[in-house]
Length: 315
Image (cartoon, rainbow, N blue to C red; front, top):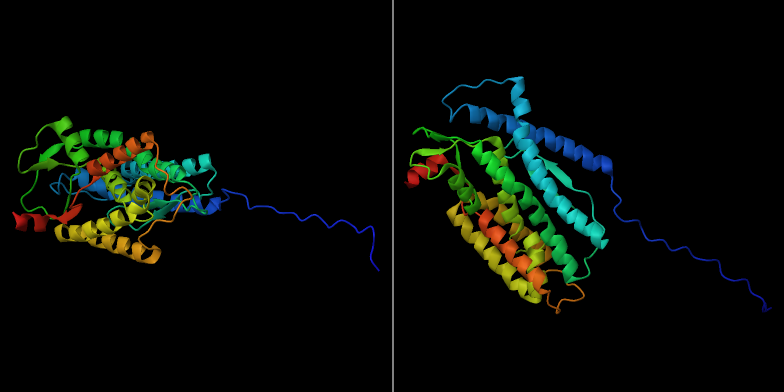
């Protein structure tokens, strides 16, 4: 029998998941482990620094660990500023993102593989995408520049032993400018004895340049798509070609190029679309994109790391 007075349906509670929810213990644990691995790397660099290119024997001392913070503190501030730049931009636009994940690594060259945040939802507009993408490199660069000049000022110019065995670091334009402004022209046969803080700043410049490569889901890829829209696909493919060519100049590009190719194959060369793909950015953001490109040029080096014996053979 039909009920003329049916009961109203029970209300359905629809709740959206809360944003910016993280397992803070995981982020803190990774940060502590990365502080440890980078401090050990920094202690090794400081031992090399005070050995004056191997002219003085340096044995392990507890104070070397403390001096390792010259490197670890500098690099973690630069990497942390970069990722927090992304994170705070996401918070501003209410785009769900994780806190930074720091990646520790055994004491091999850097003591860390960097850091990243995880963006958990699509970014709807190009303006948001651009601001989130560019915020990281700008923030990291803002901390890397003063660290570079202070670190270079702490790095004396010394004569390089003819039988030196080790690695030579490629010098980005900004690094060369800091060296020249601080010490003038360095004569042949001499080099900066890099203080660990200077090496951390050098690594920060390299990380900034790598992130600004205009490829896929890298910061440079976000910026390229926000500026060029569909045209960014051609830029991605062209940049992959450039990375392959760079492996001819330096084998240190092999791993990075392999990762770029793998990422492009996995995600496709085309950037995920936004709802306003065909609407151009405003002029202020275009100028900011140009500034990001200048930062890329200043931080880039075609041969980041080369064994000194290969350089001697080339001469």
